[in-house]
Image (cartoon, rainbow, N blue to C red; front, side):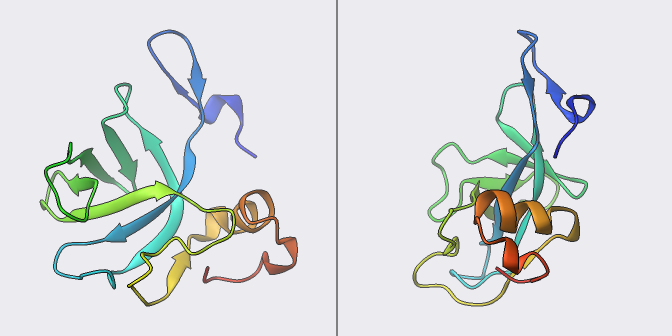
Length: 123
């Protein structure tokens, strides 16, 4: 679980906890890019997402298959909430979806409701 001290304080004094999200590289990958399940944080405006030292900004509808881009490299990504039933990757895509170690148990128990899978490294 996330402690209150790990939450982001927004302008109105609301606490918003980081989210476990699906992150997939789209640039040059079609629907088969490297994909992960990991914990992200958001900017105050909600237009930027932070993950593993990278900052992603919303594409605002300017990309065909992506909704965010890496502000440093320009690479396009799909970042979205995790589906309770799994199947986060696009229906036409394939390849493994790795789960970050720090979110693995929470992903399997809280999101997927499959606690027996808590040691699985792939979604």
